[in-house]
Length: 323
Image 1 (cartoon, rainbow, N blue to C red):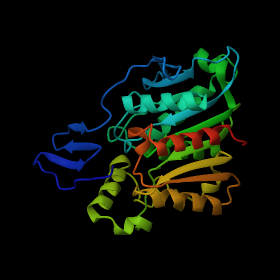
Image 2: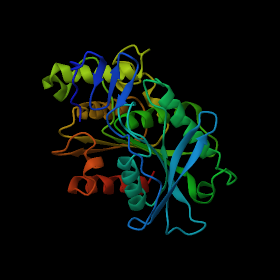
Image 3: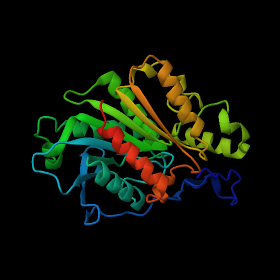
Image 4: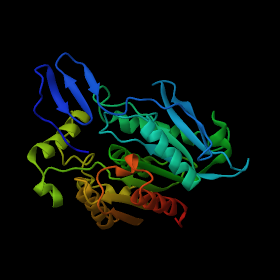
């Protein structure tokens, strides 16, 4: 997925960060993926219903809410809050890619889910995507006493079993929302775990399989981070390299699931995250899934493949296991 072209072919291109985004000298922004919109649905195949609701009136932000159709009127389900990927700058909660995946995840895991549409960079640099996702969690928490604005959450969300999840940049976001939860907490809410699929973490010095990668690709990943966070101290900033975070032990959940892929350049960063978290003094449990023969976020493009189905089953087991 990371196939950056750092040599802009056109004179009017200021920065080419394919496959995500191209910035032009006149200020135009061309997003290369995730521009299509899939409407919410009442899906007969998965028996999952969805609708779009506003979670921040001030910022005019919406999310997509998912609920299994075959749920008893008073049945409580784990609440999954999902952050989409796309290098912080592309895709949305409403794209067909993410609508289809979260729909599938809700059907298999039997959870109620919020797919967060956060504001994207570069118009809204980090920490805006983190803050928007935190706002979505706060909005969800307003339903703890059963008197929030959204009846699906009032009736069916179990706030003692909240999971934060995301892939790529969304995995980065899920981690940081969990870190903030560890510091601030929310009354009546317990974040049981986080699910990080091919999380977008990075660092200044190449490690593992990064050592053999083309320099332009490494620079492209770094450039994507600097676009997302112009005020960053660099790629050892704890926001992109949590292995450098002295407060990592305050992660606000009791268990973590991390999926890495053999052919993903971000693989070793995900493994380093797990290794560092174990040594940090954090007392929770870590489950690592290493997927052979697959690349970055393969599950989004091949959701019915053997490996994608296996990963989905592991995520379902993680959500419903003891915690």
